[in-house]
Amino acid sequence: MTGKAMPIDHEYFLRQAFKVAIRAQETGNHPFGAILVGPDGSVLMEQENAFNPTRDMTGHAERVLMTRASQGYEPAYLRQCTMYTSAEPCAMCAGAAYWAGIGRVVYGLGESELKAITGNHPENPTLDLPCRTVFEAGQRTVEVIGPMLVEEAAKMHEGVW
Image 1 (cartoon, rainbow, N blue to C red):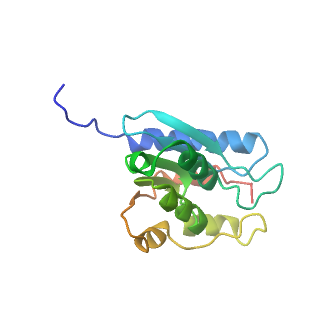
Image 2: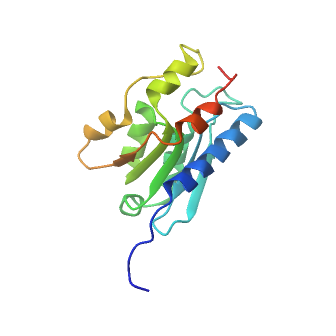
């Protein structure tokens, strides 16, 4: 072993987040999903959108995942982790990721593309505020990669909104 880090296959992990989003839709939730990947490439947690059954408007997959992650791991460890999410984290979710201490976010569908798909749907009044803008207001760096695999990410929303 040379001590070199293995290249990260962002598309592979992003598609894993897409599978979680599809599972969320199949169980009656909005098609959003997120996963937390550790520095060794292991999937530490998965989270479906949690809007139903209680109609929790803050039950976004990324926010719930970051709440769970912050309860289970120290910020120093989370700085080495990546959150993969089917859509760009909204301002609330980006804030949760920042406060939890996440080091990197990789997302599929961008907020502006999501807004174009959902319109002003009462269950998803999309904030067209890039997560990069939220993270840039912070005191530490959060790496952001995305949008990626946009057509695949958008397909999950066909006929939903």
